Amino acid sequence: MRRLEAPAVRIARGRGNPAAARNVVPPRKRPQPAWLRWVIRFGIGFGTCAALGGGLLWGVESGWLQRQWTAVADVALEATADAGLNLQIVEVHGRGETKQADIVAALGAPRGAPLLGLDIDAMRERLIALPWIVSAEIERRYPDRLLVTVEEAEPMALWQRSQKLFLVSRAGKVIETADLAKYSKLLVIVGDNAPTHAEALFDLLAREPQLRERVTAAVFVGKRRWNLRFDNGTDVKLPEDNPASAWSRFAALQKQHGLLEKDVRIIDLRLPDQVVVRRAHPDLPDDSKAPGGDKPKDKAT
Image 1 (cartoon, helix red, strand yellow):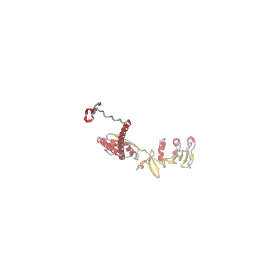
Image 2 (cartoon, one colour):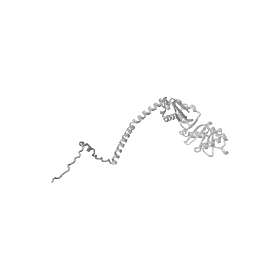
Image 3 (cartoon, helix red, strand yellow):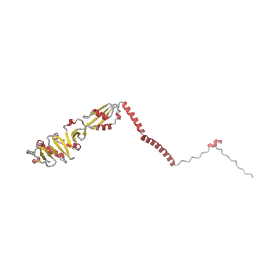
């Protein structure tokens, strides 16, 4: 007996049967692991940053960025100058000994320079470097001027060193000047370190203005104390410790006994409880008295 078999059914694929091909579902791609996606993203971001950073580093090291920035800034400053913000006038206040031309030269700002481009700090440093100027303030006054206010040194003394005289300010700064004769009536200070301690001496002498006017010279002795020379040739020796008290004591003695009008060559105030004097002419009688009725000791010092 013969077996009956069902005819085989062939499913057409591809071009031969378009309808059947449309019904075929393609295989799904296997998804990438999460870590791989993170690595790829990180690599892209890192590469981008590295490229930008490398370009920036090259720009900085080569000076390209600085040149571009400077060029842009110069163009901007020129634009402000063209708009009217340029230097035309320099006003100077407070000068006395310093010439106007020297101040303008120290500023180093030519007429027509962009006002916004001026380096105020550098200008101030150049002004203070001038011999007489001790401080300076500079302000921009828009649209076209600079206001310069300077403070000059106050000449207080002539410093004698190595048979030469130098003009000294209150702060002990040597002031360069070609006309010392103009200051011939100033106090003369003597000693290598005298200018360093001069300000304290000036403050001390100012406590007794009438006596201060009669002091013609001051010698800094042993790098620690002062001897004062008065207009009548009398020398007053101040102590190292508490010279202000000795100066006040001497002022009281002068008012009571007029020591500077007597035949006195040296008045020694180095001892706190007594006054030692040395007469200019020992043969003459001594009628000076110390405070409290004690007679000053006539003693060589």
